[in-house]
Amino acid sequence: MKRILITGGAGFLGSHLCERLLAAGEELLCLDNFYTGSKDNIRHLLGNPHFEFIRHDIINPIYLEVDQIYNLACPASPVHYQYNPIKTIKTSVMGAINALGLAKRVKARILQASTSEVYGDPEIHPQQEGYWGRVNPIGIRSCYDEGKRAAECLMMDYHRQNHVDVKIVRIFNTYGPRMAVHDGRVVSNFIVQALKGEDITVYGDGSQTRSFCYVDDLIEGLIRMMNSPDAFTGPVNIGNPREFTILQLAETLIQMTGSASRIIFKPLPQDDPIQRRPDITLAREKLGWEPEIQLSEGLEKTIAYFRSLIGDSSRLTSKLIGSCP
Ligand code: NAD
Ligand code: UDP
Image (cartoon, rainbow, N blue to C red; front, side):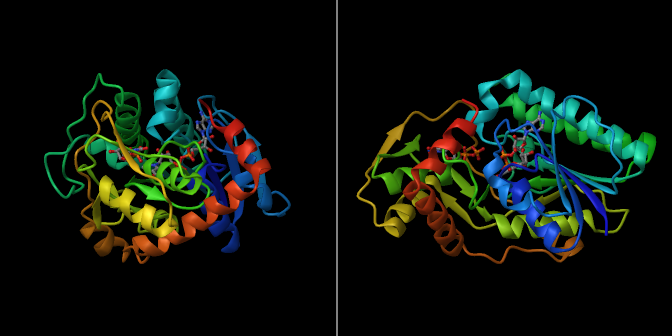
């Protein structure tokens, strides 16, 4: 049994990772400050003798004994990370320093949840790990993009200078149950709007693309990367290479929910990437990983989750209070 720390463990991805690792018989320390995460996401795990929750802000150092660290703490939705951008970049940079300091001290392996945002608004399509990206360093997304780029830099410098055992995963848009209702990301926004019969808010003309990965596939990729041979530090792209326009997503969700919602168009936010699709050749070769869940299957499960929440107004209220803005 390994002792594993998951920072950001009460968030969307973190809570699924906790579940999967507990089911595999590991001992978990779940650290979170509930900035965007919620107790609801981990309530069902709290009674498990192999699960311990630590309320802590990762911008402050922490001293623990662990074998592995998944560093996921950071708001991920543009709405949330732009709410307090200074806090966002502090979380990425100081959080990475603190998690790496811990890894160095106790000789733990550490996996950094990086992002496709390190590619910015890319000129190369699909995006390969060797591409250095096109990020606006002074725009409204840079608190997140540059924070994650600095965290990758720190991972590699701790690796080269202090021989810390690091793994970097660049996560592409992932969706599924336990996204917060007011998370602000496109899949949850559109599903909630469709289920409530509200207008579906497409930003721009909806021709921008994203490639959506279901959470179970993503978690499998993270765990495979964490347990890959020492020499493979990454970065490695983990995401679903099937690409859709945002307008296609809106139309699909209206059809799947049977909603009477209509599509309305709103201004495209500044620096919103025009296209995004992972090249997953490296993940296939090194991890034997590729996504298995089709968009329609993943959306069915996600719609069912939000339907159950919206039908239960008390949980909906607590989710709203848990959201930072
Ligand atoms: P999320 O917002 O649901 O989860 C982030 C978690 O981190 C929350 O529980 C939040 O409370 C916690 N957190 C934030 N700041 C913290 C701090 N200072 N100290 C301690 N905890 C803190 O987002 P998510 O989608 O689960 O994303 C998890 C990680 O994966 C993030 O690092 C994100 O950048 C990365 N990622 C996610 C996606 C995606 O599509 N979901 C894509 C790329 C990268
Ligand atoms: N988007 C949209 N309507 C929404 C939320 C998002 O059209 O209500 C668009 C957004 O402008 C972007 C895409 O959907 O082009 C994905 O946005 P999201 O916030 O999910 O993630 P991003 O990939 O931009 O970080």
